[in-house]
Every structure is written in C-alpha cells, then in structure tokens.
Image (tube, rainbow, N blue to C red):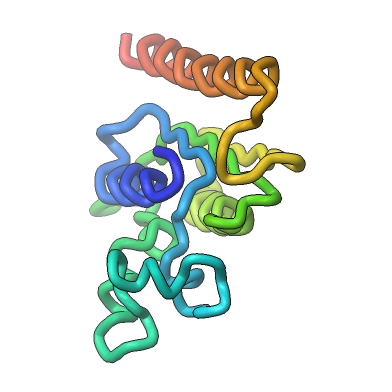
Length: 163
C-alpha cells in the first residue's frame, strides 16, 4: 500500500494477520489518529472530510478504529500464539504528505506486541526523498527492486514454511 493505501493494507493485516505472508507499505499513512489531531500538519484539514476529525465529538473513536498504529492485534488469539506478516515500511524523510515517523510508530507497535516473534519488521527511511518516487530512474529502479525482492522472498519463505 502506498500513502493512504498503507492505511488500508495496515488495517487489513491488523484485522487478519493470518491472511498475509507480507506487508509492504511505501510512504504509509498509518497513524491518522495522531496526525489528524494536528491541524498544522500539511493537508490535515483537507483530510478531515475523508477520514474524520478526531477533534470533534465521536471523531476520535472513529479515526482510532481504522488507525493501524492503534489497532495492532494481540500476539495471541484465544491463548494461541500467532505471527504478524513480514513487514517492510518505506517512509521518506522529506515527505510533506505523510510523516516519516508514522511508519516508525507502526513498526514499534508491531514489535512491542509481537516481541517474542522472529518475523522481521523492517523500516527503511529514504533520507533524500519525498512523497513521490525519485526523479532519478536508477534510484526508482533500485526502490522497485527492493520492494519486489522483499515480496518474492516473503513468498518463498511462506511456501517453504507451508510445505
């Protein structure tokens, strides 16, 4: 998922981690409950119409309900341990639309809940980029290769574990 697509895939993986072998999110918007509270953040006021205003009565609860950072599932389900999908989050330091810290908060929440798991939760922050991919074709190709390699490796490992 990319940008607000990160909200979608994060919420889906949180709701049913058993259905995913990998979670990949680029410049992910995964902390609407935190970001949308600050009207000084870029685009926040515009996003209230789409996602809700957590500063209004009832708004905070509705935004919390879809926020991947706040809805990471428990590491056990009815006493049975479960894993979270292998995760790669790709924020960008100079992103004016989604704060790079959102991906780090999400990774921290996953790692905290699934601390006994050895499933990787990786964050690779692009220290030069913004919300949109680099204009440099070589860098864009490297970014895409990283994403494809992560997914292929996750599928390979999943198939090996599934038998």
